[in-house]
Amino acid sequence: MNIPDNLKYTKDHEWLKVEGNTGLIGITDFAQSELGDIVFVDVDPEITEVKAGEAFGTLEAVKTVSDLFSPVSGKVLEINPKLEDEPQLINEDPYGEGWIIKVEISDASELDNLLDSNAYKALIGQ
Image (tube, rainbow, N blue to C red; front, side):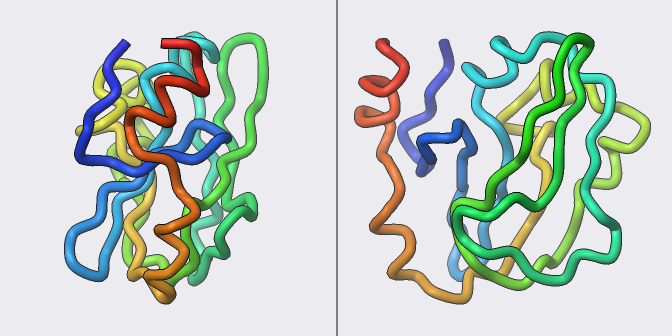
């Protein structure tokens, strides 16, 4: 199971890569393996803001639908355009090409509520 040390994690299996005041958000390798083949990513193209802990979209896998929860609050800067035609990128490269949204982080103190890689490993029993 790939759990990079340079990311922050939520108990709902999202990851956050912080670069200055922006963050890339996606789902973890563990989450994509549990969901199975992802066939559709549903994030409202009109979304302008996310709030920490609140759903911002859904992932549809062959057998289930799962909500996506934002690890931080902020302004949505970009939705990964590749996922519209290639949702399987989340399965193939969850920490790279399979990122879901990019946000401008509005409250850096929210980062303190996230898990580091060791805490996330403990959460999933690794």
